[in-house]
Length: 395
Ligand SMILES: *Cc1c(COP(=O)(O)O)cnc(C)c1O
Image 1 (tube, rainbow, N blue to C red):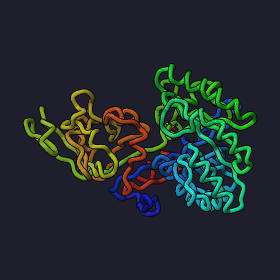
Image 2: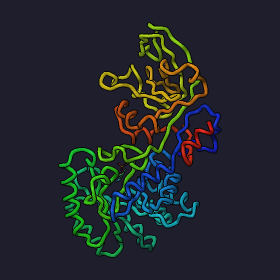
Image 3: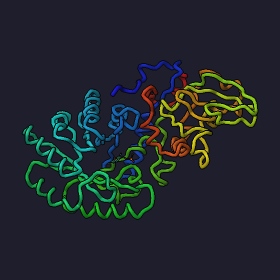
Image 4: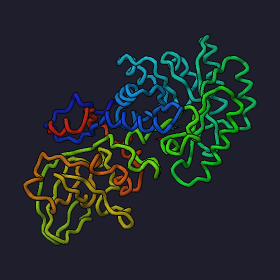
């Protein structure tokens, strides 16, 4: 898996798209969630390369804020995160692997001190057999099914699990489940909470974890011993109670390559989808769906457009609409309302960040901020900046 472009490969004069990562905002979001979680510890989901922003970069910043519990999806992600944290001297992080473990993965898990989250009896058997072959002892977590029907051990299998624990090989340190509707409605989450509570009674003294980001905003009842926020750390919306509480972390910008004026009656972009009803100044920007700026965010000419407005961008202090279809490497902006001398080639437009909420872009594209972040293309350089003011001085 080739790494995304890093800041080392980018000069401030580059016209390629990049995303800046405000690690101070990331830390502030973690502290906000940590304050909400009361006595429970606050962990961090850093799967999918830290929601597209670089797992090691994100985890190092969060470790500095006080986070010690990190969740990835795959053993391979955990191994690479362990290497990154070790290189920074951050040795005592706990790294959980959400998607279980196969027999062949056990040695890598042990070497990198990963804690597998075991979600079915086969995984429990794999893990125990791997430990016995390696003559090792190591901690594991168990995930139970409470209503999502995704990954999880069924309540009916509890006695088999208890027997495995009694066998002495399985050392369970965390019991978890996952909320399906933390940010919508209350019926399902109440049911899941009750079922989880009942299940954990079978494991006295073992730590419990139920909540993702949206669950972290549901009050102390949902916090248990450890919360596992992801999207909220990265500044994405986590249900209504999170509104106004989270700072944007990722800012996607790309440069204007050309500005032209088209006449009323002409059209712009593929399929002539944007019909111009007035003389229109158009800025052509070097960002497209190959960079993860979804075609569904287009201004006109995509199916969603009958029910939702197109996405907005921000350039030279003005909010401007995306014009016509987003193409592979280019997006058109209608900059008619921006004073002409402010928009010229080289000026960068923001596609999400402090001035354009990532959730608004996601809404326009009929998706969620998670998909925008994790879908950022590999050629979009990821750059950590101490703060955006510093970045702006570079431009
Ligand atoms: C991804 C994930 C999280 C974090 O979810 P967010 O909605 O991003 O907060 C927590 N727990 C599990 C099991 C997950 O898969």
